[in-house]
Length: 159
Image 1 (cartoon, rainbow, N blue to C red):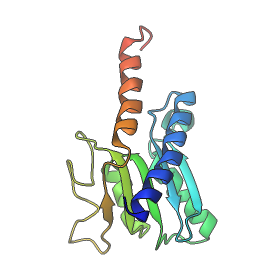
Image 2 (image 1 turned 90 degrees about the vertical axis):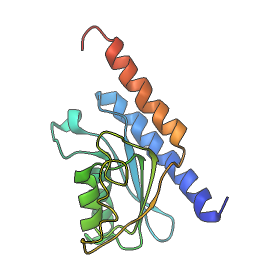
Image 3 (image 1 turned 45 degrees about the vertical axis):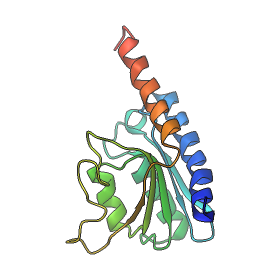
Image 4 (image 1 turned 135 degrees about the horizontal axis):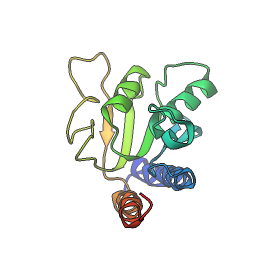
C-alpha cells in the first residue's frame, strides 16, 4: 500500500469515530474530516441534521465549515476530505465550491451518491474545479455502520 493509501486508511478512522458520535443524537452515522497539507485535521464533522434541525448539516458540510474557519479561508486548496459515505449532490457542490482537491470515501451511495454512483458532480468537466476521488477506503467498516443503523431503525417499534 502506498504512503497516501496508508494515510487515507488512518484518517478514515477519524471519520468513522465522528460517524459513531452521530448515533448519540439519532442522526445517520456519517462522519467526515478535512486534513490539511501537513497532515493535521482541520475540521471534523458528523451528521447533525436531527441534532440541529438543519437539513444542510451533513458531515461533509460541517467538516468543511470547521476547516475553513481554522484556515481563515473558504478555499481549502491542498486539503483532503475523507467521508464514510459517498457525498450527495449538495455536499459534492460544497466540495467543489470550497476547492477541495481530493475526496476519499468509504461506502458507495447507490441512491444519492454524487461521486460516480448516481451523479458525477466531483468530476463534472463543465465545472471550474475537478476533484480527485479515492473510493472504497475502509468500505466494509463504513457500510457496516450504516447497515447496522438502518436495521436497528427498522426493528424499532417506535419508528
